[in-house]
Image (cartoon, rainbow, N blue to C red; front, side, top):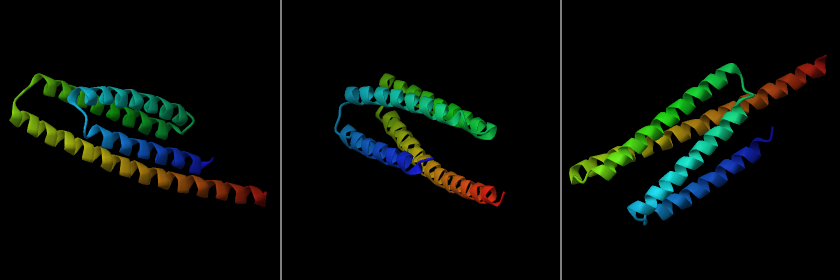
Length: 141
């Protein structure tokens, strides 16, 4: 497997995400709502692609993937519900506390992404080691 290609794709997506976040900082609420809807669609597509990629994985990995996907969908639903509440409420105090929660969610998502990256690194190293070991055992036969 070509891990470098996948890592390069992730790096490119990170750069695109950074550019998108930078641009979003100066947009209106309506523009941000469109950007959020597009990000949701992109996330759903990425989840679908990742599920397809994971379909060849072991049963445990598949279970882990299903749990991660369910967690991601629940988080998205929660974020959408909170966004709808923001649209329906004008109270400045509520808006400030809601912004604090949204910022905490963003921080949590970044922490999860960092964990996922470390988990991917460990999985890649384990896969490389397993392949090297398998090749060395096959050479003994």
